[in-house]
Length: 325
Image 1: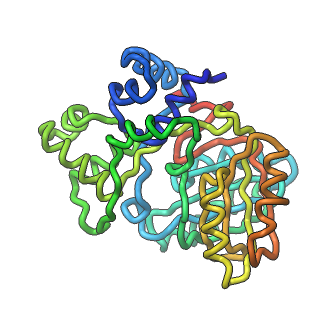
Image 2 (image 1 turned 90 degrees about the vertical axis):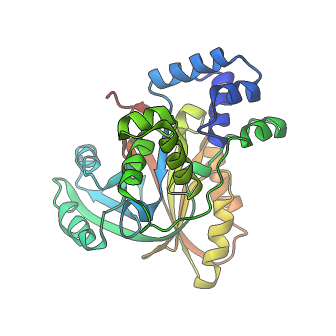
């Protein structure tokens, strides 16, 4: 179990993933050495990683897709493992409810989507059927989800090292920047010195490139910790059917809900997908029966409850931790 100081550190990193150890120590009112040891321990225990969330247009042509997979009886585990190995699969989980396996996939080019959705995924042994929805717009993603544990004063200290993105042109990304994107995707806290050595650039050049990449929003550093480690033992993917005039309003309200890790407007049989985390069944019941009730235009919903997470943001998971290696 994570300790209260561990949770405070994670909450601080959610606000400022690249904050220096000194700034984290100041915000948490502990020594820098204590913060450093705690951060190393969480990483060594495969509980925490700071990665870089790459903007969709810098990664591929076209948006991701939600895919629900129905399997033959007894085949959900083996099918989920096989599907998780596809390089296009960002997230793979065994689920109960609407489907047996839930995937989030992002293909490099729109032209490759047909082969993946119509041939490769259905061709996996044990797969009996599939259904997909195209993401049109994401209103919130995992980098915005927060543990609300820190005071306003603590948040102000951390905000000194926040970088507020101001947008970018996907066609204006050079070869060195693309190599840097790869480094930041794997290690969102990489230093200019480390990046410079890997890229064969001076530390000052690497620093300017990192700051430009972050400021333009090409990469957004984020903390990766399985929600169950933070006390959120239930995770669900909820597909809502909504009348057209209410889609934007409902999606906006859902994006502001404390449970929301990922909310998107989609094209398909559903209108909005809400990927949420909950501490227990009562909290999820309150969301479904109380929080959704006043929202206009919702005509139907389908729920897939996550039973086992195999892969999230291209990183394999095992028993609530990162898989070894």
